[in-house]
Image (tube, rainbow, N blue to C red; front, top):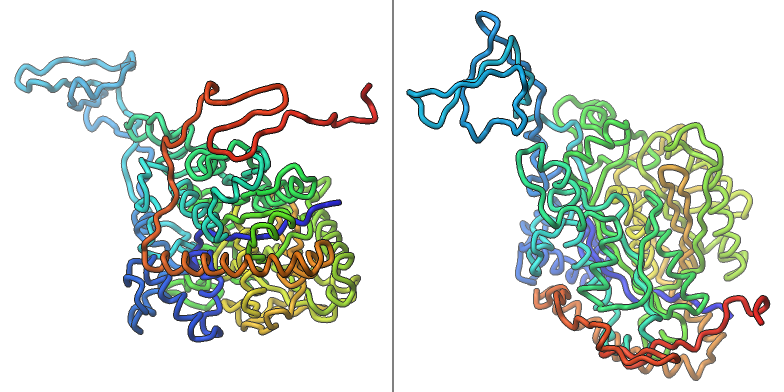
Length: 623
């Protein structure tokens, strides 16, 4: 009997703010919320952006918050788009004669002096030497250039995760991991020690990473840049740049976990790849608690230039052409899914979710934000080019809809489903993804399928992108509003619209108006993934059928205390009273600390042992 993976926690940060308590979602639809909910999110954003101390922002402060969240012009705390340092190849030629003469200090000479150079000391200038080079010298000249891409989805201005704990020169993506994973764990409303006591040590798993690794100067980027900049590589830059390092940090400094760990990379579908790994563990019974997430900080000059050179990003000049302007680009509307557009918009985000099996969630009284019906992943087969589209996404979408039909029935698929598109804002994506959606709606009998595209607000955070979609889906379940594609004013002529609705305003569906939301992701190389997310009321109905009304009433009684703990945590976060979990060097164990027999291993700090009374994985093939 497969266990149901229940979503019991969500945390992190993206350009809309903190994810726990649905604040990031609320930022998108803040003008449609009840006043109390809107005010709580204003206070949350004001506090994390250091605009207020948790008080309700005044109108001027609110405008600052609006201007400095979501997609916008790249701000100086990331890099100066008007003055990006680079080295221009430069040739110095002799002005007279056949030799080029220059003076320098002895210690600045290269370790290996070219054979053609002639060097002599200068008696009249102590410490200097004169170098004679035949005819010309190739060198690099420091220069500044202006970025042709000046928009990105950035964390709210004023929020600096590395300042919230002793980060010790951590790459930005890892600092975001510490904040995001801490937020997710605490958002559960149940103390981690209580959760850990309820399961065996190896029944916990963490699947987290970053699609491109940590490429800022404190990570791999600095390791590659240092020698070219005349600096030394540090001992941290290489190891902290590894793509699975977010999982390692969560285990070592946040959870103290000895369970399964790793990351599963799939380009822009990476979050769903890791989520599938987590739900497979839970459904099989191998794990009972799984933390899944990704963190990516790709808004650096080098990564922006890399994607721009591919022709993938929305350049300012192209944006101005779309709008018939010749002065400045509309950076707020850089991402325009399914409209006339010119490329996607990079973004940074850290998104983490906590899953439990259904029995454990009921036992602990966990909040049920939703459940994962399934995740489907398919490649494209033979391709003309690595970034080109293929057929794999037809398979993932069809299987997700078919599974939703099997769980909830035909009417739920036809009338109570919604799809969150990959929606990158590239001309190719708008055509191919709309064709897939239209065909899926036709064959499954959906008359008018509402299509969302949250990258319009948040940009494309690469590995965590589907995590952004999940956060917005869970918010939609909680508040009953589908965020509209508000950066567009029309749907492009080449977009397939049969059986589809691309709303440009928020759509009210009600708190139990949807039974399922599909998250669609299309990654470079043919990494297609579609996730089926079930609404909380559907998950509760499934749990009642399995466990009975008595168990549900007992869960509800325990859940009241958990709900209060969740509310208290949110209040404390808004007040700035909670620092990220970071237990550096705490509780470190050695082999001599273990109590072992051939039947079990007991670990200090864990209530239950690791059992060694294991069955054969191949019972029909053994003696």
